[in-house]
Image 1: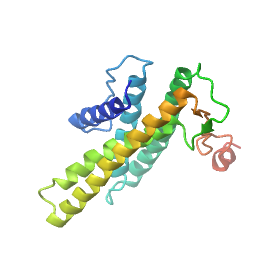
Image 2 (image 1 turned 90 degrees about the vertical axis):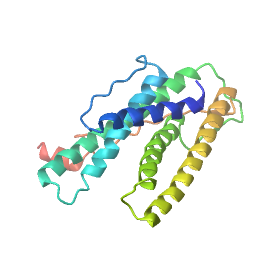
Image 3 (image 1 turned 30 degrees about the vertical axis):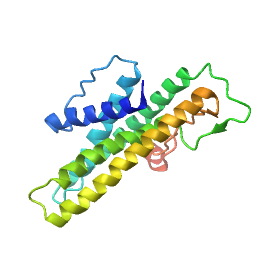
Image 4 (image 1 turned 180 degrees about the horizontal axis):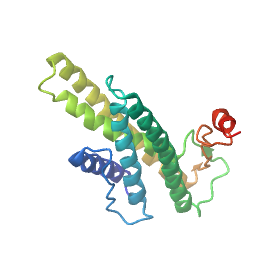
Amino acid sequence: MNISEFNEIFDKVVADYHRKDDVNAVCANPYPEGSLEFLLYGKCWIDAVQWHLEDIIRDPEINPQEALSIKRWIDRSNQERTDMVEYIDSWFMDKFKDVTPKKDAKINTETPAWAVDRLSILALKIYHMEVEAGRQDAAPEHRRKCADKLAVLKQQRIDLTSAIGGLLDEIASGDRYMKVYKQMKMYNDPSTNPVLYAAGK
């Protein structure tokens, strides 16, 4: 699978989500379960829903009880996002399991999947910045600034896509190697969050 196809999948997710533009919409993942495409689509769908939850919770008129409910939804979403990134890294680990790293092979500062996570978010940023750059009810200065930001985001995606492709090539050649550390988020775990385990006493 070519790295450019990752962006095609992410753009498809963003378009699919905005057909209903509803955080409660069901994710109809069109790819075979267990495939990399399936994981990428699911990952970006989580990001799309969370993006809009973050918008909703910032409504100054939001009911406090609704805000609390959405905040907990966002917490669950963050955990799902982390889990999905780790599934994607597991896919890459399996893909490169037969590669023997060279003696001078280096490790990257982040795993391929965490880099891909940023690529997924960029697809959402680009979509929404395009909306802002084209808003006819906004001031010309707002549209100009958003158009400038959009150009930067598009260049960022080109650069990040190239960098991820290079990283995967280097792992495949043995010049770099993967090592995955679980995120071990403590605030969701009742055994490591002091507020949660104190409440359970």
